[in-house]
Length: 338
Image (cartoon, rainbow, N blue to C red; front, side, top):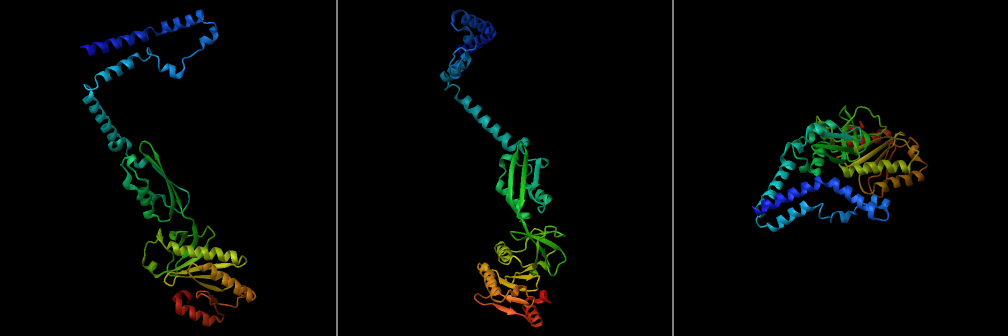
């Protein structure tokens, strides 16, 4: 009964305090006007921030409740445990199990920063995350799902749109070549990490790259598959860029990559074919070609040489006879040089 009476008195005291608040404010203001020297300054005076929280009258009810709880903490211990457990369980349910925070398919937004990534495939690849709590979404897992079906994806940015949405921005590796297969009619582009993507028209002004790989003739669906291993793709890019830098006036007709032989053949508009091996010294092979060209009066633009073989370290083989050279190429590389 004592506890009940004390709480009742406290509540009545608070009610009286708020009821007479206006009267007390007017009385305090009149006292300041009457007794203080600077009346104008006193009328604008406000209680400092920290002093405000020390006013006992303003927090009489709060202090009373705190004192009651402190004095009866042993008595209320089970109640505190029950309330705390209830809050934890309720919060966990709301955050992880309630439908309010479950990812909704209509709230997932996927945008691309290029024209070669397929947004429809991206939506399909992340269907497993729908109806999962937004707090349980692992960004690395979402990125792996996206890259599983589209290996050309380079960067993914994921933002949570509370309460139940995601915004995903996708950036692809850049296209590097317009790819053709000797045995297929379809044309593709290939990204800098070696992934093939179907594209009819070479509207990007890319060099042509022929992929000589018999395994692709057995595939009915090549899109978003690896055309060239990423480490070998780096050799093709280096050969292109370094040849353009070393011979700025030479016009390149096309490139060819022979997967089984691991070779790069660069055909120039003069008809010359440069045979290179895919190795870390590919820059040195092109430099050797430059030295040989300087010593032989710019033979690279003479139209008198069929191919030059730079594959053997320290040696250069030049073939000029068209019939003999074509026979050598066809015997080694098959129908590609028919």
